[in-house]
Image 1 (cartoon, rainbow, N blue to C red):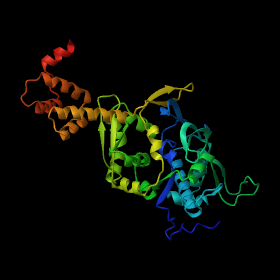
Image 2 (cartoon, one colour):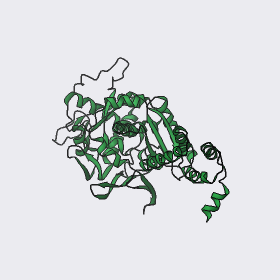
Image 3 (cartoon, one colour):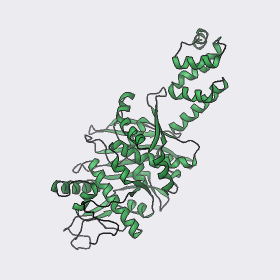
Length: 418
């Protein structure tokens, strides 16, 4: 088989890989590959309640592994990225993907992945990874969006439909002279409808943290939706973000920060995000705010994803995770969401508090800083309690009382008890 003209084998035995690869949008939004090496789960379940038209419906994203092959993990994710490179090259050359896709030799797949191409162990691992992805089923109930059909799909399917290794028999009874991959129909259809987002492959490969690389995929889609909005940041509940990555959530914010901040910091240091902030918000769960950096803004200029704002907000709306134990004893995480995004609700509350503080002669900048750094319930109480103070400069008194967590005036405490 002739090598595509845009693939060059360098003298240093490395393929000149495409700098930009195309990833299908649904697979950037929803979790498929496990990020934790020790994770022995066989299933990922995502549930959400959304409003479509005049109805509230439950949508489901379920990824279930074959018990024989196991759940797709980090190595499988890298193999799939190599497949995405090949898909990108074919789309560029042919303008369309047709089954079967010639993958080339396992030797060249190793090169694409940057691993030892002479190790027989790696060949076996790649074969197992392809088989594992092939046997992993996706159940979509109103989650997977078909661009061509302009509809949310209710179906059970796989990313890969069939794999034929070199020397094995093809559907037409011929013996394969190459390694061939047949893509699943829904995946293939969206690729050919260009329901894809460009991914900077060089940058993705440079990220040391797997959490950073997954956040890069998720945030890249979400940041794109900021173009038509006044706000210049996005936010997630910690528990929700854990399900999208996916990783196991922690009970304490100190451990949560230890878990996510190495990835957050790497994205900040490489200018994909300009900053991020945690907010305890006086609740059991926490919010994480992200602002796009120059790298993300540049990607937004290059990307051409049509109609993305019509559906990503529904997928990324607020959800509450509930751990349940199945009859097999395995824990699953099921997610049920409210109609209104937690972030949108929180932003509305914060804007209202800022307005109330400004009316009390607190500057807008100071008010915003108070809300970011202090418990909102405390601020609400002090907005009421300040009326029971005899301070000459009530604005200054209020700011200091909130920052230093002063005791409320006795008259206010008597009033609320009554």
